[in-house]
Amino acid sequence: MQELDTVIELSRTQFAATALYHYLFVPLTLGLSVLLATMETIYVITGRDIYRQMTHFWSKLFAINFALGVATGLTMEFEFGTNWSTYSHFVGDIFGAPLAIEGLMAFFLESTFVGLMLFGWGKLSRGKHLLVTYMVALGSNLSALWILVANGYMQNPVGSVFNPDTMRMELTSLPDLIFSPEAQAKFVHTSIAGYVTAAIFVVGISAFYLLRRRHIELAKRSFRVAALFGVFATVGVISLGDALGFINGSAQPTKLAAMEGLWETAEAPAGFNLIAWPNQEEKRNDFELQVPYLLTPLVTHTFDESIPGVSDLEVDAEAKIRDGIPALTALKALRENPDDAEARATFDAHQDNLGYALLVQRYVEDVSQATDAQIAKAAADTIPPVAPVFWSFRVMVVAAFLMMAFLILAVIYSLRGTLHRHNGFLRLAPWMIPVPFIANEAGWIVAELGRQPWTVYGQLPTWLSASTHSVGYMIFSLVGFVLLYTLFIVIEMFLMVKFIRLGPSEDRRESPVEPTQRHSSQWSEA
Image (cartoon, rainbow, N blue to C red; front, side):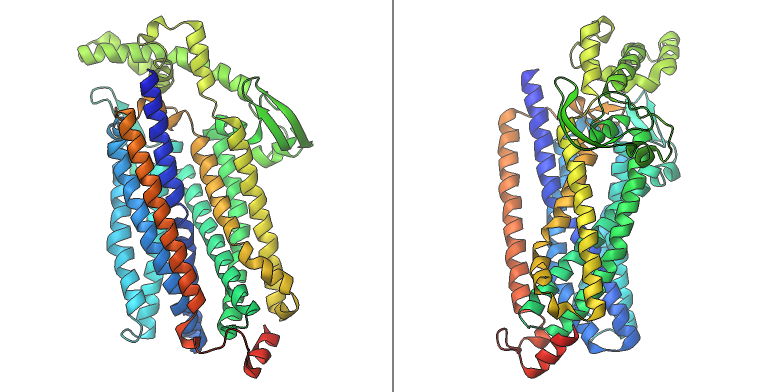
């Protein structure tokens, strides 16, 4: 059992590492695709060549990021089959469909139009090239949609039923799968987070050029377009984050309890833990600083609903485990005799909590003989690691409001034409580029770590999902992936820095040190 636990943890670590690496590329791809479409639309409408130069330049950086995003994403899909074979068997009928559609979107739609967008300048008419750019943006976001539909099912399994004869989840309603509130809220929230990422990326690099008096005309317009785009995006990402939190509160109360550091049920109106130091071993916060009355309206959108804490959730989980044990016992009987009517009736009566019975099977093979202590231990497992989820959530929220404030100032300075008076703000802008990436990674940690101990919430425990590899194999593959993906990051940074230093090809003859009189007048208008 100890070796199995090690393999499971190594499998989780490997998938987490590859996902976190991959997710460094995804948001920027999503956001830049839409920003490119916005810039080229302005070019087609106005006919001003500067907007064509902007689209052409930023598309180079988009292409670098897109290529490495595809390379890092491919591995993750193979990992489902190699490292998570039980999971793949259990939900393959459901999970495979959105992944297959995503593959078609990414490689046959998105990749094709990326090539046309990059190499179609001068070969396609303005209208046709704009359509191609729109298709790139559409393809990028549709790829994200199908991935998040699959992930949404893992967070809140709907539109499916477990078949005891095949030991698999089977799809019963495709619309329920696609349009589940969890999947749709995650898609919009994640996509808009990508728009914020791209906006700050463009603002930061544009500020870099403005400080050095290079490519001023392109930089000041890119700065303004991205800042305006980013302000609306930050409003959207915060609003949709609130909606996603509301949905999580009902679909995954254990995640909500971890996000808010709630050990006991909070009666309305509950206070919001602004800062806390969760102690999972003793099931309390060693320290907390609260804002009174704020949590209840934030989480429930009411003023009179209580919010369940860890203690009550463990009691509820224990009851579900006890109710699910007869279903698991009956399932074993059905595997030996599918015609056992009594076993099937028992299974049908208790199947809703089958997944909870699987939790206790980690501690005792014959769950019908599980002791109270073993059931209590399995119930405690239903609570995710509170401290990392709690703090990751706050990092994400603080970063979101910081980016909103930054982008509002960027819009004000740009529209007033006073950027040249705020060198301190321009120096800050490039340092803001990592902030949305940190927020995105923190959000991923909240979503995925907060779902533990489940791969499919309430249905399939993580401990039962992994393949039976050796510890040596998992260590070798983990180290290999970390080294390979680190190389990808180095390549990305090298290429990005190289092309940013070169700047737009149309303006490359401008001096990076001694601005001309024309540059000075342009700068004063920025």
